[in-house]
Structures are given as structure tokens and as C-alpha cells.
Length: 608
Ligand code: G6P
Figure 1 (cartoon, rainbow, N blue to C red):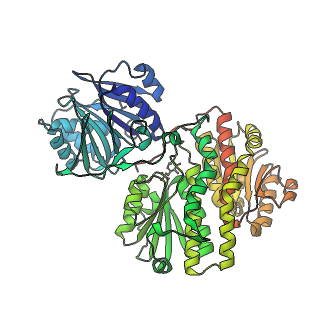
Figure 2: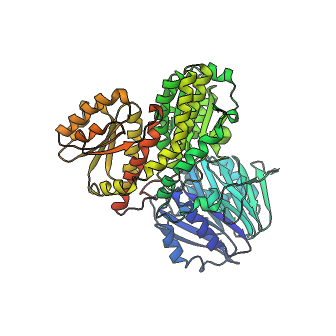
Figure 3: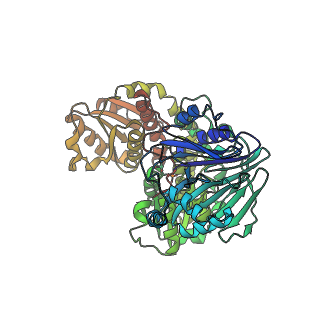
């Protein structure tokens, strides 16, 4: 949610900022802006729309000369996406420039106080308060002003700040919104995420909450909120820039879809040794696993849907009661937690504000938290008691595919580990599941081969008004994800229903020609699903079925069938999701939409 970049060094700053912002557009893309110190003044250019508008306005950055600057790509929260509301924001005399990611929760109170002192606001944003507040407390020392302002602000913020009086410095501040600092021989950088600076350096400092960084051309100094200097060690980023580039694909989403066999294998393989599941990295003893009396899975968006799958799998295999909750609900509903409750927080980014708040709530109430996280060193990874990383690599497209698939694998591994420790599955069942699990990358690869067929089918539904997804049990869990994928990138209204629930209301929406995607991979529920398919077909629906390969008879009962390779029933979601992702992708593509950057969305939602 909003991307920040900053650079100070020997090169022209604006092209470096544009380059970094291009890697951060997944965080928001309704408006952009840069501020660069040109030797006398801080000059600023802002534009509504995508980064290409700013790029054109500044001729690739060439019209903004100077070697120190800050840039921003916005996902509007306070104030609509306009040039004026775009970041950076200035104080009244344009001597302090600020870019911000997060929300200053007490901004109205602060704004009133500032207005009473004569400060004039030009934008509707909460961020402008920061620029004026800095002005109010600045008496020559940026560090002192920043610390004073931090004491007065509530909420979450990652900030990039420049002071005209200190042209050889840029400042970075972090509280509850991600920010990293990169150290390179060509200059130093700040950014919301690693891909923005990977072209220049792999040496990265992860800022902690309430830390301040002062960057000059050849030095980086960190301070705490009491202005005391801190000693921090940089981390080396091990992945390559090519992981964050399109590599010949039209869209990042398609690249990520095709990376799934590898992502699934990378998440699974290091944890399978000598026919056992080894999760030593969790730091949970068998005794601790045996004592878990209840599990909550808490997450947002697709990660929540992975959690719904997790409930079926964990309850089914390990016989532990599992409740799945949306993080935004869980954190405010006074959940019943104790020391024997394990809270699993699932998050690709590890920065989602509600998921992070849910984690903190759970810890405060004495429960242990296990994070299933993709971004190494992210807030959720750092604050959870136990972490199981998904090794999906950087995921750039807003709609998640490969990260979701690796979250499923992480949940399977946990469920199998917990089951074997608690003795809820036999040795023979365990062995057969382990074999099935190891087939997954190859089977996902196989399904990706149906791309052309699915594209043809998708092209028939480009003008659909509504599409429904139905399933039972685990197939209901995957229907939720299939429906979300479709609606978020194609803007076609879509809903997922537990197939048995359809007749309690939703069936009234089925008309002649309505597409219903039915998922039927759970053998014991197959006859029930057939009845549900009949119910909708009788009312005119066209049914696309996703089913196990052994049901050739389905052709008579559905209008279009996609068959999945044979797999253990617990793991079918990992296969069923592939045609559903491809279907959503091709519908969006056929409708001429920007698949990677759906309207109104952002990948990393760092505000409530
Ligand atoms: C946003 C993204 C979704 C994602 C959700 C949770 O809404 O658009 O794709 O599933 O956030 O994100 P997280 O990083 O916590 O998995």
C-alpha cells in the first residue's frame, strides 16, 4: 500500500527513483511523484495515474536534475487520487518534502492544532500533516524534529524525508509500515521493498519500528526515537533481480502462475528428509505440538482462503479443532485464546496491517503464534514465535497465485507433521500422503499445459455479468479462491457458495446461460455435487466442472469438464486452483484489462 523510494549518491536521482517505483507499482498505482534537490531547491513533480505519466512528464527523470531525491507511488486512503493529493508533500516554504506509506490516525487533531498556529493545508491527505509538523519542530536538526514528530503521531508510517537545509542527507522513518535501507557503492537508498533497489545492491538493512535512518552519499546512520545512535548489521539478499522481472511473459501474473511447480517444490523439498517431514526451523517441540488444544488460522484475502483449506486439512488429519477467521474480524472480536491455542497467521507480504494486529492481539492474550510468511524478515516473520517460510520468491502481480499455492503446501506440511506427532494417521497413510505430496509439482506442471483450452473457453465468457463457483468441503475452499481470482482481475461479479447452501437463496440468481463453475474432487461428496449441478442446469446454467480424472461420465452431466490428475483428496486444492487461475487470467486478458494491476487494489495492504 503505497511505495516509497529514496536515493542519495553520485548518479542523477530521478531515473533511479523512477526505476525503483516501477518495481513498487504493485503497492498502489493511482498517482505518483518525486522530489529532487537540484542544488538550490527541492523540486517536485506529481501526477495522477500510473508511473508512465510521471515518466513522460519528467522525460524519464531528465528534467529533474539532482543527486538526492524521494519518490512515491500511491494507493489513496485520505483524499482522492489527484495531483495535489499525490506525494511528496511540502511544508509551506517547500523546504521539507515528505513521502509516506501508512495512516496517521490522529491527523485531524494534529491538523487542527497546526491550522490554529497558521499552517495552511493544500491537500486532503494525512501525510501533509507530517510535513507541517516537521516544520513546526525544526530548529536546525532534522533528527530532533523527526523524533519530536514521531512522539506526536499515532498510526503507521514509513516516511522518506528531505530537508532543503541538509541537501546531502535524506531521512527514513519506520513504524508499522515496511521500509528498508540499501547500501551501495553508487549511493544509498531507501525503499518499501527489496525489488526496488536490487539493481543497485543486495546489502540491505531492515528497519525496525520507531527507527530513524540518516543517509548521505557514503554513509548510513541509524537512531532510535531518543536520537541515540544504533548499531545495525546489513542482511544479504540471496535472490536475483530476474525473480522480480517479467522474463518474457506479458504479465507478472502469468509468470507467477508458471513458476508454481518450482515454488511448490521449493517450499516442500527442503522439509522432506528420509521420508519424514522435518520442520526444525519452527522451533516447536513434539511436546508442544501434542499440547495444542485448538488452532486459529487468521489471514486476509487469498491467504484467508488458504486458511480455509488449512482448516479442512488440519482437522481431517491431525484432529485438532480449527477456526479460520479474517484478521480484520478476529482482532476486534475478543477471541477466546489461551496458552494451548496456536494461532497461525498466514501472509505473503508479512506486512498486512490486520494480520499483524491479529498476531499482536494473540500474543498479548498468551497464545503462541506461528507465521506462514513469504517475505523474509517482514514484520509478521519477525514478531511471530515460530515461522514457516513459503519459498515462492518475490510475487509482483497484485492477484496472488504462486504465494497462495505455497501457503497450501506449508499447511499440508504442518498438518502432516502434527498428525504424525499426535499419532492421528497411520504410518501407511503418512507414507502414501508423502508420496502424493511429492507428485504435486509435476502434476501442477501438467495442468499448466491446458492453458490454450482454458483460454478458448474463457473467451466465451468475456461479457458475463455473474459467474458462480460451487463446491463442498475442500472444494468449497477452492471455490472461494477461484471466485476471488476472477472478480479481482476481471471485474465480473462472482460468488462462491457451498454447493449445498445454494438452494437457500442464491439459486434464485441462476438464469439461462449463467456460468457455474463446479468443483468436485471429493469422492464421498461426488453424488451430492452431481445433484447440485443438476439443480442449476435445470434452471438454465452452463456448468464448467473441475473433477478427478476417473469421472469420464461427468461429460453427460456438465457442459465442459476439466480433469485433474489423481491425487490424495487432501491435496486436490493445489491442482484445482490451476485451471481456476488460468480461467480468471484469460477472462481478464480477453476483456483488455491490466491483469497485474487491477483497479482499486494493492498487493500489500498496510492500512486497516
Ligand atoms: C491483498 C492482496 C491479496 C492478498 C491479501 C493478503 O488484498 O491483493 O492478494 O491475499 O492482501 O495479503 P498478504 O500479504 O497478507 O498475504
